[in-house]
Length: 410
Image (cartoon, rainbow, N blue to C red):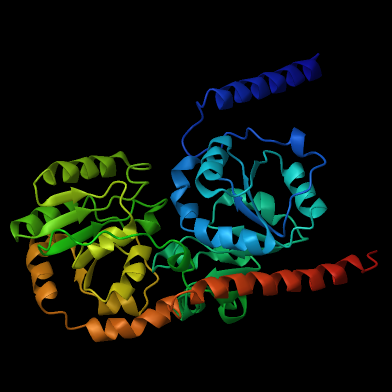
């Protein structure tokens, strides 16, 4: 009787879970797990590469910066995006044009990777759900992340779970070597630059407003206290008012995850939007990052990848300093070179920006850092490094798998 009751409860939980998934009533951040498993029972994926992305649609910004390079890799070797969330899969299929499947069960995933002779599995974040794919021993696993920055997540101990990491430049290798113990960064990291710079170029409209302009691009509140870099609460409204009072135009580029974890950050976002109803303010919605860069004379940002991506513009930048005592960073030369803005000085952001737009004393030294952070930036060079790295690792996997498959195991 007890066993029958236990079986009934499991069935009810399973039925209830399916209903919640179908009605899209899951807690935020939880994939719906509505998979194509039954249809994939005997299927074989085309190509050599899987991009594994188990996240919900909120995190799609992490993958979008890789669409262009992945399309090129698909032409060269064949790529399938594997999701755990059907809503995410639908969006990726529409946006990227890449083959996409949704797999809910670990057993389905493991079997199809092995059956399809997949050589590489790529990842754009450190989602704990990545472990479902990381179990596969027949492929080489490569972390790519979705930007290079001095955030502590860039040196997470989770990097050790992956066979290799594609990094932007030497700065990332030095950062990992300095801050991640027991990790052989030079051997495990492959610099590929920022391949999206070669594939995602967009037509940038000529600048129509030539007033001195500051791009304010804060990051989100972060997933944990040690990675709380956002300046929205501590600096945002005061800094934006100061910039406007100094006669500067402001472009505000909010992070897509703002307010997802801490509601107060969403409130600060709304306050800044109200402030920027001023004719000198623009909220960047539906605009490319390149357009915002082109239209701005200086960037005010937090510790994030946007600071590194700004480097090739040659224009000045100011990086905020978090006031959270629990937050740490993985500092490289950028953080000591760029002027830092404390929360207590947010009300003088306008004067500082005016001064740096007129006189940028660190420009030459910043220019020298471009290759250190991003590698060679001549057109096409990063994409070629990325494709070449995938080819070489695929060949290495074949050698490895032939050796392992030929072993007589006890």
